[in-house]
Length: 340
Image (cartoon, rainbow, N blue to C red; front, side, top):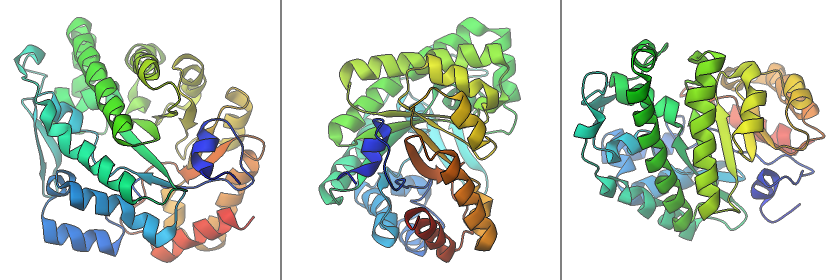
């Protein structure tokens, strides 16, 4: 096995044992995270405290020994740097103001220094991280970030943003372009500070028609990949268009990403048969299966590992780990994946 099995896998080299990390592994299912958050205050207080954010990033590595550490931050740091005011209300989720559904993009004044604590976190984690662990940075993809910027909040169906995009595609295209520009700079500076691979989270990609997906997901993602590769050609980029389903094939073929993250609704056997041969994949265990544990969890893990036995594969969840996940079941996942 290579010294950095996760990084090698993302670069196309299949490993005898699939490397593993879990989305949202640095977070609220861990008692040590809950203790630190109680001490420091709200979520943004943690993100903007680089010492605390570095500690949170490292906590799951110390406890579980994952092959990858994922930067502790949030996808909405980009709209914050673009000039929106970001808050996290108790029980309300993130809020961005002013919402662009009724305010002009041109009225926002960029505040790029709001991203400085993130880069400081990266440097602190890099200095402390075990050399065998791959350090992953991330950003939200333009469509998903735009849904929050336009509506000012999250939603399950993104109706406000979809209506806005249909009504004024020129104005919405300008928002997508502005997010893309900021995202390239943000990810490049994460890499400059020490991350070794990055993931683009498109959490709401599943709400779009094929034509909308082409316009608002594939095209801007391809631009980000192209411009980021011009600056950092050797840094792998993982694309995670959650809910894309059958549109994953076009995404894999047209965006230029190095690896594809699969959500839990994707049949791994279909993905292996349909995606470009040799392209690394990541995923795609149902987070709820980890809560269930037991024989059902083992069986679900085995199905995924079998489907991707002949392809570079990073074992992961199909989305973020749930708050009420038993720690013993996370250990079960690690034992099953690594014990084969």
